[in-house]
Image 1 (cartoon, rainbow, N blue to C red):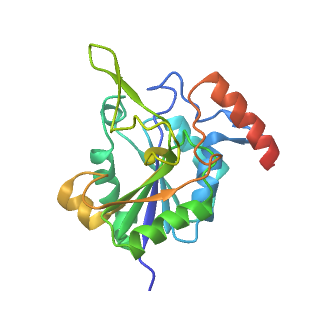
Image 2 (cartoon, rainbow, N blue to C red):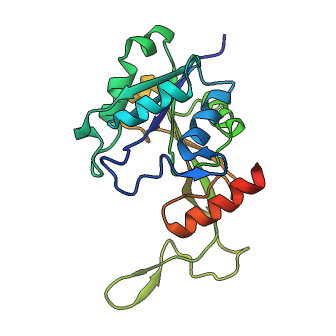
Length: 229
């Protein structure tokens, strides 16, 4: 029998984040809908939980997804939604919910709304990978062969011995991209960390790695959404 997995979509909402993109339209759907729809389409996710202190998001979900199975809104405490507060305590609250305990999930996957173009097959890939390779946690990444420098007070110095300028000579670095964090729940309960222990990875494509933070990012995302539609 396939292990149960829950997906968590954390959303601060406009009340706690004036630059919230939750209800920003990309094509015919809001960014929140892009995220929820792909989580629901995943063949590996048993329950999707949208967590937010913003009651308008809960209202939107109850109206837009009326009667849709496998979707739950969790009203997040405002103190846990501040910019300098991590997700650990929120996750602890969610995995103790009756609806979650009922299905006894072995894994959870966090899906960041800032990456609207992650597809259900990529979510499935993340869950399959953490199970097959039996890692404690997993992140989505992009390979980067750029040369990085750091100022040491006396000038710029290449980091991690990257002074080789040939792309073929340099070892690739990996940067977090795509907004996926998966974790074995047993390991999370023991470590109280989302990324720890043996950390696996999946490499996402450039479109999946597109993040929406600035107006320019949004322009690009709008163009990409039109191509997808």
